[in-house]
Image (tube, rainbow, N blue to C red):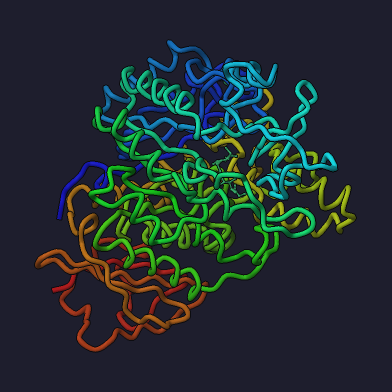
Length: 555
Ligand code: ISL
Ligand code: CA
């Protein structure tokens, strides 16, 4: 067991636009975050991952960066950012910045230069290609956010690649000059005292040479030609050698489409690449084969199957990140729990899962309050570019039933995670004194931080306990994971073992009571409850109540 800070840490993700507005313009900002540092310290988290705060025209809320060296006007100034960093450090917390270098904004100076002429020195900072003979796009790849991944640029008559929106042109990692520019920029932030990076879609940066497609008619998924591409490990090892290894940093790479085998290559001990990745397989358990908008019921078997595969797959080498929601995903209590009569119980049950599996837990803002999905009644109330592009493609151009598509958006849309943080029962949930950039979830009068902090039985206090337990019990971090009752349809149960210490975790994933029959050789007799989401009084060793979660220390 090799101890490491980043294994023992709990990370809290802030989506600045929606966290706290300090000046009444309706947009969260850096001073807003500064005003909540004591709240974060009280919760007990060790690291803040800050979604992008760099200069940006906000086509994709900061994931389209026009200046990597400066702060977005709406969020404040470099001085505000420095105050935030100092405030975190003064409280013993660390700051992980978002690193978005698969693409930049089309308003970045590099792209402005690049598009201006074919022989501009920055031309090769991006991926340009002439069209096919008939003038159509160079290949049939789709963009993540609907339509072709190629955009014709009139100035030079060539197409540029954009895996995301057309205002997010892909950077050309084949160009050593671009790579050097990225490494310089990373060093700039690390020299300012940043403690790590969350790397946006980092496994997409290496594209197969020649940018081939699958030869099919019409648009098609190009991911086999850029996910975990041919030079990805070379690039990451270079980044590590030139930048990361010179600092004591924490790293996590966002990696859609990553497999367990690949994850070991990214995070293995002797690989010198990343510490952990965000894998996505468990985010696919309620989607059809082609799209997240194709709603399918999930089952515990499916979800557990994926989590178990990753737990065992990275048991010897590599390390897991643990999350059930973030700024791109619906709220976990609405998706995997019950956000109505069992909101409290199921949010705590899911929290128990996240904090007792092996890996580093990531809390997304508001998760600790049990914030839920929002159901905006019309498409106009949504803000996300992914949602609007999809709606246009499906409904406006494709003639799909608007009601069906709206339901998919209400269930899976990213704006579910982006409604303002619910601080109090005051107007606009205490998020802003102005008009919020996106509607507040109307349930803020009941679900808010002020109430939660005041109520010892709240989800918030349950998170505090879980985080505190992690600091006192190495078994939570380093203990071996072993699945029991592998085929149970309602209960997810496993043990964690470190030397003499053995913990048993039992989680009821349903809204009804379920009989608990432990396999032979395992007994809770004489064991202690470490944490549970129901009072210990009334606990029946042979039955779990709706969404009941228990962690035992066994004798
Ligand atoms: O959000 C998703 C599903 O709806 C993912 O496909 C998501 O686009 C993918 O995980 C990449 O996400 C990251 O890069 C995007 C940005 O929009 C996301 O917010 C970011 O997390 C482009 O930078
Ligand atoms: Ca503001």
